[in-house]
Length: 258
Length: 314
Image (cartoon, rainbow over all chains, first blue to last red; front, side):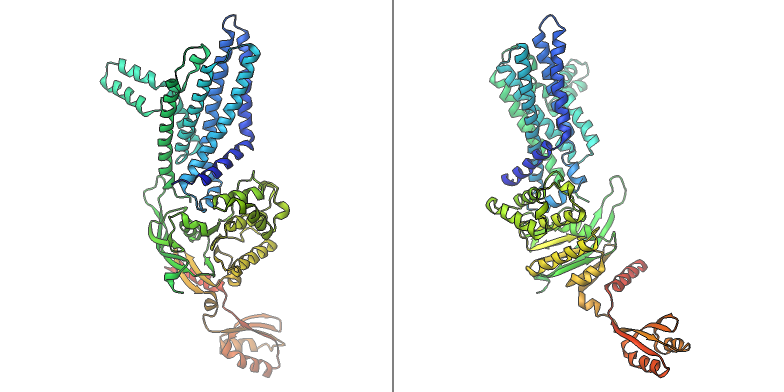
């Protein structure tokens, strides 16, 4: 049974570490700069300049959000072990699962905080250029938050047994593949080989279907978004994230800190 | 108190480390056993690489024993809840250096389950106790090594544990820092806490510890009361003589198997206590003077070196 107080203590300290770290501000600065660059880019187009602006800005939010999730996520456990801060923490009445869930929760909160700042910039830029912002955008931002939490869980899993460099490659690979699983499945099904078709279906089932978290097109083009478009991916993401964290806990629980 | 009532009990603990891509695992603890009694300062002594820190990590649940069993306060070390009563200072402790001294202690207090209304008071009390009140609101990255060591001791005590484990608590400290930590350890014993201390600084062990275990190459070679260790062997005495005639040193060496060191007509020698009277008479009879006679205590160092030599012969 996890203790909420101890998980919260680890989580709040993780947020505090991120807030006091300069690296994350640099990444956030680049994300906001890229969004502002969207204004320049959209001004070059005669048609649909607001849509181009929002497309670029939402892509920037996704790419930098994922970059921050991977960058911090893969170091989540490694840094604690490498700096040996984990020795004093795990000598307290705290289970390894509480430590891991606390670190995860803290990082997700940090990333959501940064996402909120990027959303505020997005709203500001949209207001400046007269681009419309509606419920579709809100749904897209909520799902982006869900996707980033899932990516942090992937990074946490790899971080529980691998080096930061390998973990970042693996996590980036899962993110890219996660956005392509539907295409992989469709390509497999169109193939003449039964084996390739099966492999495509299984890849789609095993890897996170991250494309279900992407409502950018619906938001930018004002297409209708149903409640199920939001809650189904969120439930799916929560279940997937929980499984990843349980796997990470099983691995982390068996580790020797030499 | 017998072994069954021990505060810390280690029974035949074996630890094998499996290299990542190696074929054979490496055994670093070969079935070690010892126990620590209530209210004592226990010294766990050994050369570098002997297995002291590995043993401590097994006790702290940071690594798992391959075989054997270890308990603290009667609880299996793989459990978590009993750590409410255990404090731990690792060797060269590292802390979140973006936090202040007050913040880090408050963080550890929260993890240890110190109630929120008592937390602030406890943290201030500890900062005062370890002499860090003036630097309480400075970030840890500005602290000296000695100050970090004191933060380490404070975090180990923040939840008022019954047993405190210290890994090389004096390492890297200057003489003043070492004296301060020694005084802190003695204060812990005065407060009724049990202290388990890993070290290779033998004078500190002689000065502080009630009981000692010597570990060499993953095996406990000796264990027992420090005083009993120091009283081992036949008693000897150190003598300093002056105005010694030239032929006397050779006579003393031959008759009393004395170990000698001469400077001109001055002679320093160590003899068994039963020969002291004879040596003094021989010296005075030959026209020499006696400068001093000091009883010699077997040092822990000689026992330790003997254990290491014995191990290398095996």
